[in-house]
Length: 230
Image 1: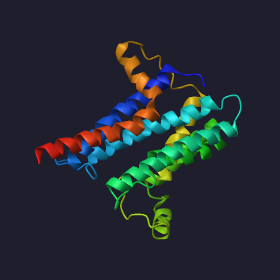
Image 2: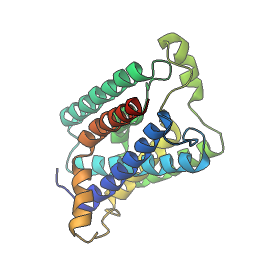
Image 3: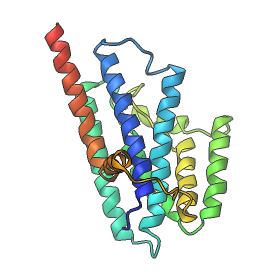
């Protein structure tokens, strides 16, 4: 797949913001700082920005990867890779937070939403309409997925609360908008290439690896610092 500097840069910004968010989460978890990272309005909006950037990038990438033809084998391999890493996140979170482990976080969502998103690859304008509709209907509480999670929780023995949950609505709407942006190449903003932007783009290029490694490192360092102080 052809690489676009602007797309890597967008994804890199999301990675940087995510690392900052998780670093603050870890500091709060070990009581180095005292913030309302779960329900604080500013923190909630910060999280929305991060997820939005990631999912726009996913939608754009789907278009680029399937520009000439939709290769189901390649897409299922990508699905399997992301789902495997999502399961690792679930396993790790279960060890650390057994009562609030992550069962459908960002990677879980990306894995499944990417497959559904393939239906809209050739219908970018429709993707925009449906995407905006999903977001608006979700915002005004006409549609939501709470019923599904409430139904599955007792069956699958899922926790009542979770450390991270990315619901299909409204977030699938954001991915669909990403498909529209990718199809019409609206993400090409001609980002100037210098040492700073190249560093950000490099992180975006290796976003999955950084995603999987950054939190174990940050959490481990925070835990180690906490043990030294106590």
